[in-house]
Image (cartoon, rainbow, N blue to C red; front, side, top):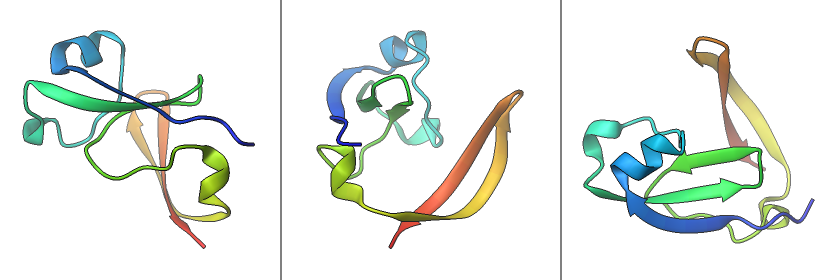
Length: 79
């Protein structure tokens, strides 16, 4: 699908209240960039990102693991 990726900046505290997911929390400053893809993904991240999901093309899942109780996380690469 061609879903927009929405980037916003907010305080880390606000991002936590909105239940944004982040991995390396100790590396974040007081303000963070967040990326949202509709109801599918809400992440705290500082890296480059696509503007729309269609730009990403196909990807291959290379790892799948538990990140919290009842939550699974995948690691994938673009092909």
